[in-house]
Amino acid sequence: MAKALLGSLPGAIELGLIYALMALGVYITFRILNFPDLTVDGSFTTGAGIASVLIIGGTHPWLASVAAFFGGVAAGACTGLLHTKGKVNGLLSGILMMIALYSINMHIMGKPNLSLRGNETVFSDVSPLILMPIFVLAIKILLDLFLHTDLGLALRATGDNPQMIRSLGANTDMNKILGISLSNGLVALSGALIAQQSGFADISMGIGMIVIGLASVIIGEAIFGAGTVVRATLAVIFGSIIYRFVVALALQVRWFDASDLKLITALIVIIALVVPTLQRYVKQRKDAQARSQELLAASGSRKNSRGGGDG
Amino acid sequence: MLEVSHVVKLFHPGTVDEKVALYDINLKLNPGDFVTVIGSNGAGKSTLMNIISGVLEPDHGTVRIDGHEVQQLSEFKRSRWIGRVFQDPMAGTAPHMTIEENLSMALMRGKPRGLSFGVTRKKREMFREHLARLGIGLENRLKTKVGLLSGGERQALSLLMATFTEPKMLLLDEHTAALDPARAELVIRLTEQIVREMKLTTLMVTHNMDMAIRLGNRLIMMDKGRIILDIDAERKKHLTVEQLLREFAQISGQELTDEKLILG
Image (cartoon, rainbow over all chains, first blue to last red; front, side, top):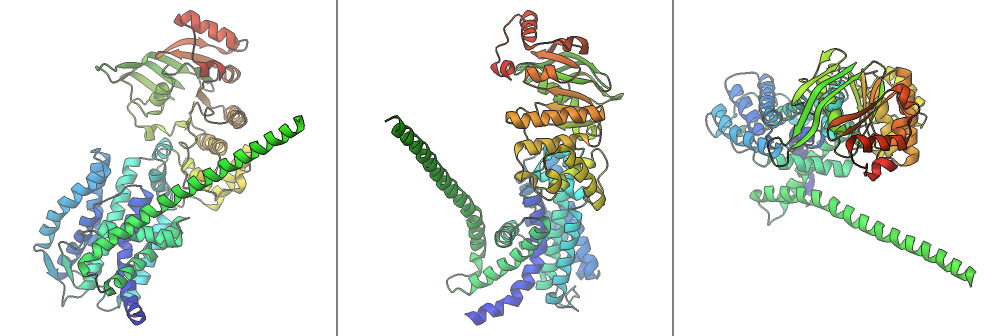
């Protein structure tokens, strides 16, 4: 068992780092903009599809990956426009885009499955285990820097207190569109790299991606904390790696098979969402009970001493 | 500086719930005017603030700020002229961001936001100076998240954020109503000091008659969406709460029964 654990470590790190880009995208919408964006399930495949088609057509893999990023940006912009200008509910605008993207992805790819076997990818010359840590770290630092610029501060405030940042002259609609675009750009880039790492793009590869992203964000924050942006983005990356590790572990267990993965992921997210709420509730209740006991005891003793004095 | 002419605002027009929130409001503020606004609940004070700041669009009439006709401009575009402090201490600041980050965002009021760093060493020095003048020790807590501050501290910070770019207009919407008396007094003192030093044209809504009389050089009273009383600096000097109550009863033909308004 221990050997199996150790054996799954490199794979978990490799996949975790590639998916970390997607998780960072989810972090931007879910945590910074406070906007649960379901476009992710579609834009992940969009990225994979664009990169695969371009690579098969002879485009340089890095260029193809950049194109995938912008494909995601476009998808995100549509969701953002739908939500801000069309005044469509946030969840619904994401769902609508996700469904629309399914058809669009099919058009991009031409068929449900594209193989990249025999084509040059970004991982042809360098192992993902060497390339990805550097690449993800670079993206993380760029994102951290961006979130500390004037524009980045306004973006964060858009999620934190839109009324306030509007009264300070920021266009919150534009900021939301920008944030959702950037988020889906990263998601699509992640999809493009996953396609190149696994050697194929599949029309259904994005299903459940949003939940995996959420799981990574939540696990990371729970373990490493999210006090500052710099810390939170790092936590998200580690969260993504740990998630892959948990998945690898779960698959070692005999009575689970691959199709149970989505259930396990959903359970992780549910536990991570529900447990803190319950804990808080229990703690508040306990505190309130203890405090009221204290108050009663205090007034009781005052009464007693006064009573004693009178007598 | 501010010129509101013939502004009408309806809520739920054409339905059984139709309410005339503002009716033919005309108000002109000269540069440096500090006008206090009183009136019972539903008088239209907050609606007037929201019309001026751009949260609401008037159904009729014009709003001019510093010569610009602004009633069509969205809130974020008007913000270059208008600093605003809200009643809710939570409303004016971003709780999950630090004091210095909040101040940086306020510093960029109305300017295009680009990719230069939000907080720089130079700005930090400036923030420290400004915060020190508040006299509540915030200058040593630049990296504290605003959500950890008390209501009074947040409101003092909001006031600083609304004013330190010297906007043309300062709108104060019952900005001390949610604070305990000691904190409210502190924020009022800071308000007076900042408005005086920067000679800001200010419109302040308050529930507290005493405060409305004590502060500013002009007082207006609103009722049912109209301005029913406009008292200039000369008359305001000798004004008492009792006089105000009498005036109100005379004009509106009813007793002022809003307990909150009388007792403040």
